[in-house]
Length: 182
Image (cartoon, rainbow, N blue to C red; front, side, top):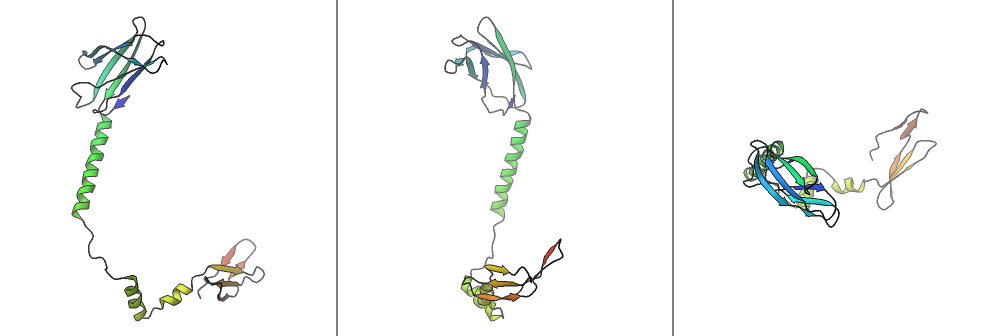
């Protein structure tokens, strides 16, 4: 399994509960002993033993380790890898985060309107738009007469906004709706 260079992963092995288990860890590149017969601790009387591996000095590039855990009679061995592509990915995402933070500092939005909604409404109505009418034209209910396809639209107060004759047509396969503007 691969881990980041700065991670300190647990190595897990299974032996009989209450065994006395030790672990020796070798650096694969030069066969040097990194941990020599260190005691492993058992998780609650389950027979699972763990050792938190934190090599010193910490690796600065992809480094493979080989471990042997033993109770004096039997052994369990495995490999652990620190660094490599997890660190490469982490370094690249850290660069992206830094770039984003720098971009936020460099590009600040300016020139936003300081006008209130009432000012904007007044200015739009002064240029010929009747916003009150547009708001009142909001359709909240649509009643369709199935036989004729007529549609009547209603506002919030359940007042009729008008009818559109033959708003819906059907050829037996498709139903089509006309554009309904009041």
